[in-house]
Length: 308
Length: 300
Image 1: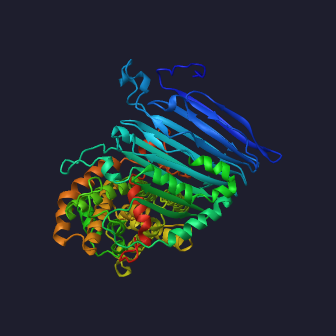
Image 2: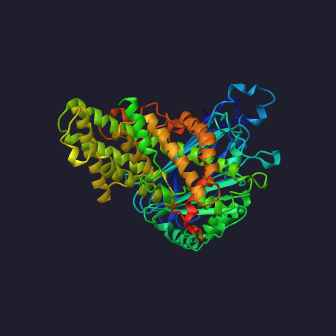
Image 3: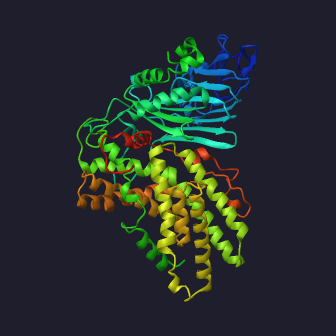
């Protein structure tokens, strides 16, 4: 489907494909390939030097609908550093909002929105995937499948986070299904496979009161997961580890406003962070501060763009 | 395996005194209590009764554990069961096959490690898994003084193969080639003892829930009578529901051998619908923070 020129979104769900290849030319990172098709859109503001490039992943019309499928292939080569960002949160609708009035939504209402990303990071190169959180609206179904293949000495930062919905409309974990898979392979070895599934209970327990998804995730309205791996992020991992081990929890009478945890991958070559907080903004502030060591790797200007 | 035998094995395995290390694991409950989640209703901030607080914790914990561990229990059980029945059919030494079962077990167990991104949970899972293998060798093998008395050649052959397999897995644990996670070792143990896959899975869930209740009594968040009430009226329907939700799930590990082709993910295996997953990010964070507690009585 190539409807790039069309101003009006197509009524059907769409299959979009994109491709990014980053290489080095002298001391500059050069996007030797960058292409995308509806509803996926890629945008690279400018080259930042220092072998760093920034690409924004956007979706037309500000969101995805049931049945939309996008596939993005990414290659980071020649010791370059690629920063992938989004502009605002990824919004997942049950149906495309502009069409709700004119078309019956039943045709595509049960369809799942699927976003795939296949990434290859070459030796001594690095990928920093730092998007805004995903927001699934009421009854939306979303699958995100991301695979990262690293050569030895490649580095990676994967941020994957989700909010409870449009709070202005009273949405609080009321989407139908959210499935997110992040798999990291170093050479032939699978070092991490994080699979998160959030969905309303499928079968009611007769003998017990209903327990909606919201109750399982309360009191928090934003959950984030970060996987970091490789030499370029080693000092950031060490700083966070030290900070984490210094925490001493005394018995509380009510949950804290923000919680985070750290676990190691392959004896500290990598780590998994998880963060939850009452407000999305608090998670953003926490991440921005805790990952600030990445500013040394990417340059402060680039890093600042990640958590605006 | 006849149902009398199966019922007898169930009695043995549900004994709370089995030395499996479960009594030092609270599976995140202690951390949940310390962080202030037990006493208040998180959505309304109102205080709630200990019975309903514990009910909520068991529901969330059991659902998450079932979705992430049952696929591995099933695959390990099937792997072992096929080895034992195949060995029976051939009726001679199958040195090559035991090596391929071992390779598949490693693939399965390593996948569980890669999917368990939590230092505290990994530690507890490995300790309990390895304890189960030891339990089989030391606790369920036939005493040597009785080995001359053979009733049934098939049964004897099966016992021999099971012992060979478990001894081999234990050796690889000692060599550091096998991690020995709880769900994969449970699958091997229960298949070796002749339990069906379904019995194995539901007993595994029951024991997880009962262990949470024992921990709760020890943490003094629940009395022993209340724990029994929950065991009968809450755990029973929950185990049934989670069996419905999860018994058909598979781990999606890639088997390397031909003797067990059925274990390879089929072309129509959609792991986003039929694979393991973590369903409770809050429980995950709290379980990982277990070691940060200023004082604690459990290991996990």
